[in-house]
Length: 241
Image (cartoon, rainbow, N blue to C red; front, side, top):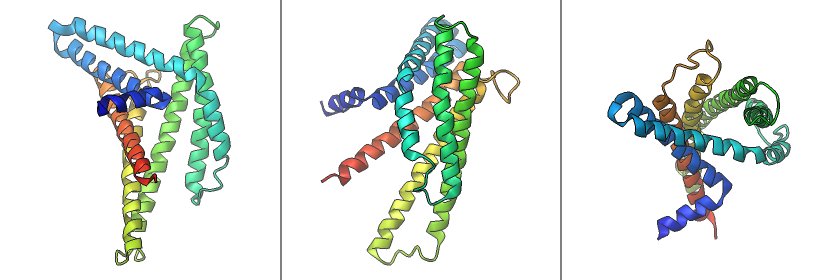
């Protein structure tokens, strides 16, 4: 019952539901792609799973029609990142927020074109939104790499002594931040590989991934995101009075 209660709690939140839909969608694409390519006798089942994956992806696209305001508030609150000590991290975060903010209206235009709501070329808007998503991921990769390098330097610093309880506590915090940044880095790299695949052919490996590989990369990214969210929730509960 505890597991069911936890799942119900996750599904009650928008972010939790989105993570679950994303993970399920990519898992269906992974399994469906494998069945279609490797198991001819079960290709019909694989085709059905790929159809489910496409519908779940479309579901997330429709739900993102309402994300603009939340993203705008976050971007406004972050501003120019004056609270960040590192200028490079601040610059990357500001550019990433800008790319994310522009991504949503571009995707909305692509969705509206596919739904015959607006008489515009959906392919162009899908390409633009995918390029903005890829740019945001690339900036996230650069930020995570930079943070890992800085945090590792902090651990190797002569001041990072483990003699006192306070220093040991800070050491554990830094280690946890490094682990979090590494997981974010891996997740962004997996998504970036897929983002490039969805760009027009001729751009690096665009259009060359089979469905199962797209599903595998998406599943890895989704599971890492779910794991990080679970760790964050556990830390919040442990820190609550």
